[in-house]
Length: 59
Length: 472
Image (cartoon, rainbow over all chains, first blue to last red; front, side, top):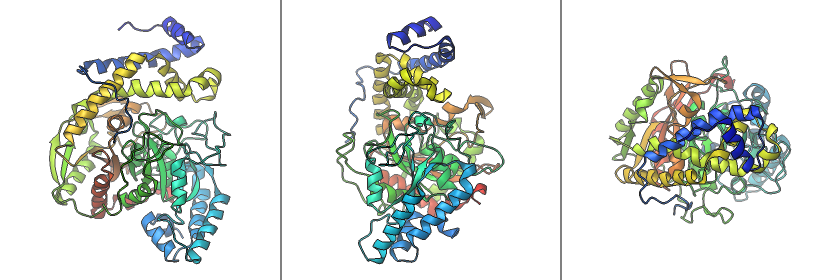
């Protein structure tokens, strides 16, 4: 997975209408990187044909 | 008067019904303690003194008139400040909603009031429930009542609920739990908390953090009190389509006092193996106590828990961002710094990652269902550490430095993904005098067994009766 840069964040944020300052982007970058790294670990699970848990009601 | 505030809800309801205690006297006793102690504890954001006293007088009149009484008649409770209360501001611990006054009650607020409960006030919390420490820069961070000298966290996000119940500022409270926010403050504040099964209790009128992982539930000093409160709150609600149509059992009747032959699965790998020795010691003693009470203990594996952090991050960050998106674009500077940054990070989680998280969630839930096919409940520590100071970023667990925030939620968040019921009960103290919690996890919609184990344990121990130094 390619690491995000400040410019990646700026572009992605702008596409969503979020206009973040340089300071905000700098503060965000390590948090976003850590989150992506953590999310990446789910790829270790054998997802096979598992469907998303989109049905909230359990019974 | 002081003794009155330490009585359990079950006893208070009985004393009120038999006219031995007046609801007015009871509410006044709690209001006096809030005035005396809450300047330091900061457990309440809004104290509803006039409304509570008026409700107490009406409750007293009903008792004296011999009218039928609800099971919580005249009992004061506190609500985490994300439960909507008609005509009373509901801040979610935020500046953004600092002056917001809902037009309707949350379903559970109405149900508790219909059962006779009297709302004392709205309790402090981590801003918008997005943090397991219970920090709040807008209303002040709650002080853990178990250490009068050092400002230690109460755990969050239901920090005010934990502090208030522990310090005798209300006998019961409501919390909410998206990654552990009922069970963590219950453990760190030495009280009992229950996250019911997803769908057991309505979330209608409860401000969300992440819709698919939010659970609402009671925080009290005893398991029996949690059973009483749960019984008054639980059940289908047309306003919340995720609530179950299953009938609500009599939770109080489920507390039979007997766990002979009950199969208890002990979660060691990932859980107890990464628990600090100061926490592990009381937990091991609690396991022996359960065994001596007739339970049959066996080690079980729940490997999917290792993947809960990744799945949970994708799901909660995305859902929280979606809820806050408009405010993040227009009122961003009004958030506290930690919550603002974490909410913004959710903007960079892709739809594919969100769905991958939900697919992993399916696998984790299936695995847990299989584990629970062979045992009746699972147990482990609620939190791998017993305490952290306000502002502390790292803790040492088994000689390794670990960040505080993920450590706090490590053992609790898997069960938010799976939706299974889970409680935390006090099971001892560290050498520094800080409380330790034992987590008990049950099968879906089997809160009765979880509460029965907790109640049996509390019948044979007195950890839940200890009073913190800051309780006066």
